[in-house]
Image (cartoon, rainbow, N blue to C red; front, top):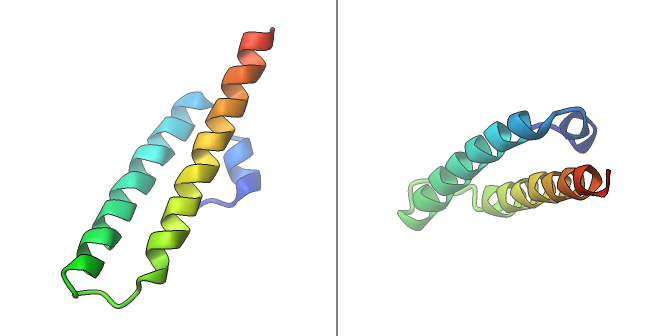
Length: 68
């Protein structure tokens, strides 16, 4: 996972790729927690937060590009 400063340096396509990767990771963690294989349930919350950060940055980039 990238931190917020690193995410801000990415362009729209790179953010979309990072979002797809984050969603795959979140799904894997969620499914393994549901099946009882993994005891790291805190990763579900942190992955959801990471996805929200990416979506927020994507929305900000969209608003900036529309304002121009």
